[in-house]
Length: 112
Ligand SMILES: [Zn+2]
Ligand SMILES: [Zn+2]
Image 1 (tube, helix red, strand yellow):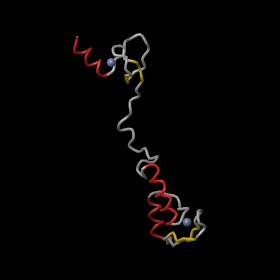
Image 2 (cartoon, rainbow, N blue to C red):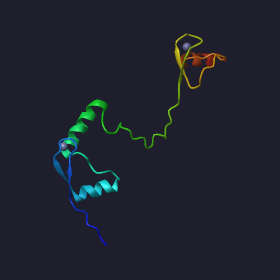
Image 3 (spheres, helix red, strand yellow):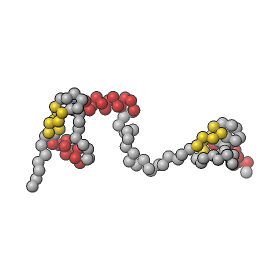
Image 4 (cartoon, rainbow, N blue to C red):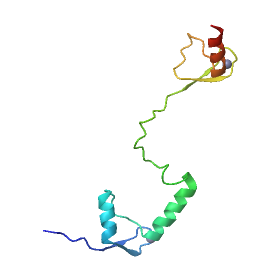
């Protein structure tokens, strides 16, 4: 049996106004496995605008799909044994080996 999707009337949780969740929108949401909208289009638009102003928008949100392509290396802060500046190294300095900043590291290598 074919079930026909029909327009639904939902109530906005923000302004308590009723708005239409059309059949085509329901299909769109179902395709993407989104849950039903809880806000009317105008409240959604204003929330999106407010969020965009604070964190730069939608794309920077909590989506981490594909985030494993470029794993971020954990870097440790250490003091360069040569020049005394702060150095960032990809291993935890244990004090037994000298740590060099990138500049001094290049210099050290050159001297060998
Ligand atoms: Zn609303
Ligand atoms: Zn240095």
